[in-house]
Image (cartoon, rainbow, N blue to C red; front, side):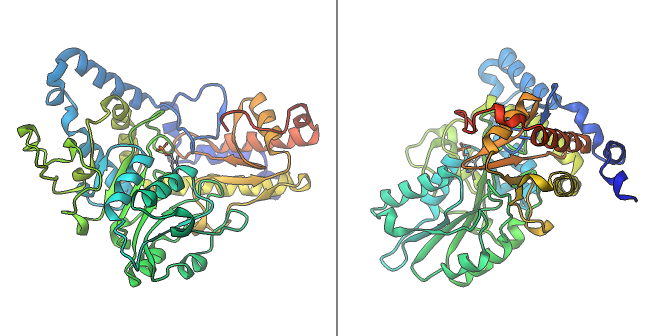
Length: 425
Ligand SMILES: *Cc1c(COP(=O)(O)O)cnc(C)c1O
């Protein structure tokens, strides 16, 4: 194919024509903007809307009996949805439960698996992860009587990239537990979870991953890799809606462990309503539930996960990589004189679902993009994050975005906007 054609609008349209997932776009409420922020909050699909309405309807129709009646009895929903998520993380159904939020699930799992001794009491994390993960780890250390400034090790990143070698170097004899992201929320780098888990286990260290930025974007093999535990949210690539319920994974080899934080929904479900004061914890990941499930905030997941089941994570990953490959090609070709740096690793094996660009005027450029109805997100201090989503973004979206960026840079319209962030970036 000739060069000019590769960068043309017709080529974008042809790529869309050939896209096996193209029909899913019509199932989403796209609006009149190009939405590239699905890695912060995914868009609403018609199926998710419908399943939310179905749950509301069962409340209307059954009242209290909705717990066991209707199309999706609420009492079993956490397990049912866990079963639907399991293939996305490479787990068995009973190892996954939909419950809590990422942050509360970190608290739950760290309070379960962090068992410090006088010789082994440190927690290993990184310096570029999402702040909530670090806040949770620090409070878990304090609850056990340790000083986070001594007992929390944060591996240093460089230019938002972490090197596995440097993480492994820090897996010392005094480390009790490791929590790392699967995909870094800023740079989009994938950490080698298989290798890190094997290295941690060689040293008898328990290891867990936060899958917030990889779930629904890349496949995982948690069982095969022998990861101890994991947690994630469902409102990013999974499109479960604002504040939708999170999920967790516990490797079945750990079944039978008492949960660090107990509540009555962690009980064996068949005897939960005997209301005994002695907890008999559930036999599987259900043991790590705490209180009454947030049914209305789980409801959209019924419809949303149906789409993942149908499309399959492998074809989603394939398109996601094609979208970011295309974006990288266009950025390199169209924007070369404007000083953008692509921070995200170019290798497929190391690239998650989004692209991070560095530019000194990132905040202004993001606002200029929004003014032409393109929705990126801004990350401090000078980054633009672009997250194309396989189920609803098109190749034409990418083409249009890069053309708009080129125009904003050429005409310098970004200079009309202050170079600082608004409240929510
Ligand atoms: C999005 C995200 C969170 C958010 O946690 P919530 O408890 O859902 O608010 C936490 N950690 C990471 C790595 C994230 O990407």
